[in-house]
Structures are given as structure tokens and as C-alpha cells.
Image (cartoon, rainbow over all chains, first blue to last red; front, side, top):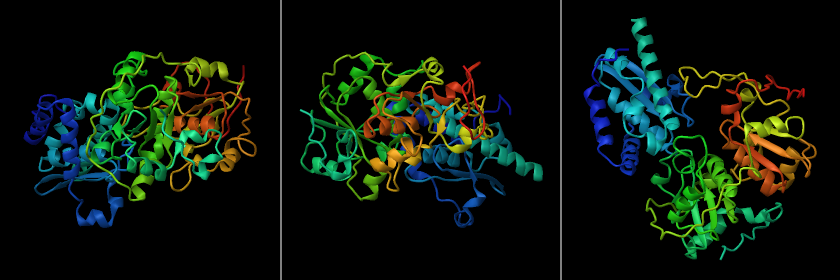
Length: 147
Length: 305
């Protein structure tokens, strides 16, 4: 992990769009993200076991990061009754997808703490998003090692 | 004036039938326009901080355990002034009937009910079955957020003695009365401790408080998320089960005190046990504390004084 790599453009945009809002509106924006979480591709929908369960999240969430020809893709699925988790997953799906493997590995581990949700959501809950990001990085690292 | 009681026969058998309401009763109160008055305020308390925003029971206000009830810096609850301000802002007066419901089988709803009880709010009820049952029955939800007229709630100091146990209280309680561990079996045995890739919430030691008996919270719950019948609850916690008697002083705990609030509610209000304290420090404190006794494995273990 490098401390100096700049935050990728989409993640920067997401961060700024949260920070320019008041505390209450930030929750609304997170809810919008939750509603935008894309469906997982067919191959995962038929075999959800391919997605790794993220134990840190108190809600059942499954996620997977994959290196494809056009860069990394991040897929996740979480139930409708877990909108916060869906919101976190959706931020990562939008923010990580299309990055190179190295760019994903360079995303700060504490990105979840950088988007102004500490008070509105609480650090404990945000650790669910940190867990998802940590998993995604590990999955990318494993795929790089496999070549 | 408090809201009328739910006369459902199903509730009548509990020690304090006035502490639960059914979804049908709440729907009637809604239809009668009673929700959101100074007599009756409905509160949603969820694990998921955004769930209320996706749709809630019409007229319900939101109180979040983490961002509303806990202090931002110290690990403790609001003080009397903070509590008065919070409840007043939700249109709740000292005489208002509060009906609480939430996700995850009412874990956080029970936790809020427990905190409200520490402040001595008299009329706190749980919606039996919680949010899940309300939704499963296809009852009305709205995204419209009410704007209650602020009420004047008095500043009342929290009672941290009667229903709350601190670590020192639990140490003192060892060998004197039952302790109920509400966590899952692998947490109780200590087999599950380390969560991969996840240092922050880690607990340093696994296992349970010596003599604690394992009764995972879900044991108290029927398939539809409502509490089991009184006879079933008695068979679990009293004669034929843990053997707790009405004179016993009981301590409940889990990981951070939320699931054990759900059991605290059952023991105190549904079975009528007078002396039940919830240890909110729970395993995240005990499993990290220096020089406290711990037992690993499936047996409760002995307390050697």
C-alpha cells in the first residue's frame, strides 16, 4: 500500500459529494447509493457461493472483486432490509470498478472513514465497509499472484 | 393519558402483559389516529441506520442506538439532560406511552426499551414480532418523516443500579446467582474469536464468564419473531431449563448488550423476575479486560472464590 497514491477520480467524486452535504443529507445520499446497487451478474446469481461472505457486516452480504480485461470489477449482494450495507457495497462497486489492480490496492484502507459518515452512521457500522474493501484488496492480490 | 392496553389473550399470560402490543393493536391505534399524539408515540430502533428511511410505520419516529442513545466519546449512554432533550424532540412526554419496534427481531428495540427503563420511563412497550412481522403481514409503511411538536420531558438521572450491571458488579455477582450468556454457541465456547481481516472489533480472549449458562437469544423467539409463550419461556429459563427462581438475581450479557436486552426484557417483563440486570459492557469488555476469570469450552465452569 502506498500512502502517496492519489485517490482515484470516482472515489474522490464520491467523497466530495458526501462532504459537501449536511449530516442528515449524507444519510439520504447513502440511501441513494443503496438503491443503485447493481444486480450481480448471472453467473453469481445462479451460484451465490462464488461470492465471499463478509463476516464483518452484521447483515448477510456477499461480495467479490475480480480482475477482468477492462480492469477490476466489484460485485456485491445484500438484502433490501440492510440498506446501509447495500449503500457501502454500492459505493465500492462504483468506486472500484474500472480501476487497475494496483489502483485498487492503493485505495486507503480507511477510505470508509474519509467520507464524512462517522457521526451519521457511526464508526462501528463503517467498519463493515472497511471489511468489504479489505476483502476486495485481498481477492485482487490473490488473483494477481495466480497470474 | 397512557394509551389503552392491548387486550389480546395471547399477551394476558405474561407477568406484565402491558409491556407488549400486537401488530393488530398498533394498526387499530393508527387507524384511530392515536399514533403521534402526546398519549402514544411509536419509535423505530434498528441495527441498520438507514432502514427507517426506506419506509417505517406511519407516524413513527426514529431513535438510533448508536448515534442517539450512546455518547460520541465515552462508552456510556446519554445523561439525564441529553435524554430529556432527545425524547422531548420526538414529542415524547414523561406520561407518553412509547411503543418500540425494530429490525432483527427487535434486538435494538429491546435495547432502547432497556435504556428508556434506566431513565425510569414508565410506559414502554415492545411491538411483539417487530418490524419483520409488521412487514410480513403487509401492513402500511411510509417514507414520510413526522415532525412532532416538541414536548417537555423532565431531566431524570439514569438509574445505573437496578437494571444495569457493570464489570465490577458482575465480578461481585460470581457464585451468587445465575448468569445468562445470549451469544451464539461458538462465541460461548470461545471457538470463534478471530474474525479474518478484521482487527478493530476483535476481542482478545474467547470463552464466557464463569458459571454463565448459554441460551442464545433466538431460543426465546417463535418462528414469526414474537416472543414464545410464557410456558415455553418458563421451560427455557426456569424449572426444567436453567432453573432460575423468582428470588434469583440474574445477569444477562452478549457482545455489546443488545441481544441480551431482548432476553432481559423476557426475563423481567414477561416472566416477572424482579432482579435482572443487563451487563452492557458484555463480551467486548470482559474478553479484553485484564485479570478477569474466563471459561472456555461448552461447560459453564466453576467460580473459585
